[in-house]
Each structure stands twice: as structure tokens, then as C-alpha cells.
Length: 323
Image 1 (cartoon, rainbow, N blue to C red):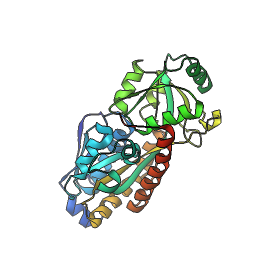
Image 2 (cartoon, rainbow, N blue to C red):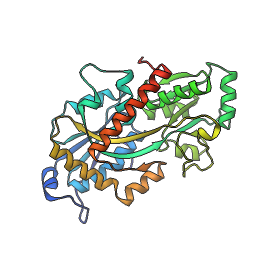
Image 3 (cartoon, rainbow, N blue to C red):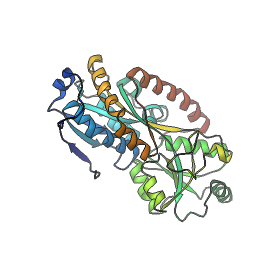
Image 4 (cartoon, rainbow, N blue to C red):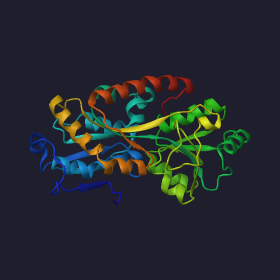
């Protein structure tokens, strides 16, 4: 599917899986907007587009993917928090914006843990460290040697200050006692564009937007942050395998405004789960180096709280501060 700022997906097709009548009756023919807090091309955007078409079929609705980047996810997050609780405006959220941004860039009157209501989990993905194709290192150990010999000369891109990419790389710097310069962008897509152009040296992010460029030889994958190697990148070692105890993953999920009634929250959660549990969605997730995982609203809420507690310790350790 071509990536556009707004993608309209049609209503239910014949033979499509259906929910109980009340949910379809509520959404049939209406337009649901999935706000994405980052630019097109990143994993959050990819996750939203993986969800949109099958969700439209399940609910008999039209689904719109709307990218609203900026503010480390706060622009889109606040828009959803202020939305009507009718279930027609939802957020496809990135875990870094949900659990890390409030720690490094709090916004007065807005807290995603309080003002966004969890609906359903989509995918979980470990991160991959990649360098530009002509970077003078072909392995992670060679990379560390180069960075130590050139302190401050290597720069890395992230999707924004306080994003998981930023925190993870700062933790890597702390663990390896190296120094690199942070270059924040408004989303993974712009960061990746500059990396491919050779304007920055590396990034650490989730596999989906990276895999085509790794396979084409435009980027070199040096390590992953998962507990095991990725099936899509079997020759790339984990950080732990290289002797660095770094484990981190991103997850992507659906949230609504806090005003969303519990009954409607549960209906939407059931619809999202119906999509995530399909073989087709799981296959697409695996192709992107990720894993489809369905969760109840309560399970997603618990995950968000646990992540915030974990990253709070690491933000303090790495001394992450808002720009």
C-alpha cells in the first residue's frame, strides 16, 4: 500500500469477519481516524496501516490514517485526549511516547498514562542498530573501536528527544563508555532519510523500516537489542552476544481518549484483537521482524506502567533531559 499522509480504506467487504451486531451497528458507515504521532515510514505508521484495512472490515467503517508528528508524540496524543469519547478518534501509540516522553518532556495538563485509555496491543519489536552503508566498521566490535578512537565525531539519529531510540543509545553509551552526538528528528522516517543520505552515522530503531535497506546493502546491521537473534536477520548478533548487556524493545498499541466509555472501549478492544489474532496480521508482523501480540485493556495498562517504571530508572541513569 503506498504511504500517504491520509489513507482512506473502504468499509466492510462481503465475507469479512464480523463482530457482534452492536459494535458494527455503532460504527457502520462512519469514519474512524487513527492518529499516528510520527511521520510516514516508521514502525508506528506501518503498524497503523497494518491495522486500518482489516479493522475497517471488522467494524464496517471507513478508517483514516492521519500522521501528526511533533512534540515527541505529544501533539497527536493531546489531540486524541481532547477528542470526543465516541471511538471515532484513536491513537496508534509508540511505547516510547507512552512511557518515556512523560519522563523527559512532560506537558502541563497532559499525561498519556492518565489521559489516554488503553484499547489493544498490536506488535512488539526489538531494535536493530544500523550504520550508513559506507561507515568504516562492519561489526559491532569494530564500531566500538572506531567510536572510542573518534570521541564525539560519530552522531546518531533518533525519532525525537526522549524517544526509545534516544534512551537506548544513551544507555549503550553508558554501558560501553563511549561518546556520540545525538541528532533528534520528527519521526523515524526523516531520521532514516538522513541516515540513507549519509548525513548521520547510525540509528537504533525497530526492524520494519530498516529491513529493505539492509537487504539492499544501503545500511549495515551491527547488532540487535532482543534476547534472541531475529529470524529476519539471523547473522546479526544480539548486543548481549557481543558482551554488552543491552535488551530493549518497542511496542505499538491503540489508545482512545479517557472519556471513552468502558463498554465502547471493550468493543473496540475486541475488534483490535480480532485483527491481531488473524494469521495474515501475524504474518505481516513477522515479515517486519516483529511479533503480533494481542492484549486486553487491563494488560496493556499494566505494560505501560511497568515500562514507565523501568525507563524512569534508565532515564536517570543515562541523564536524559528534554531539549
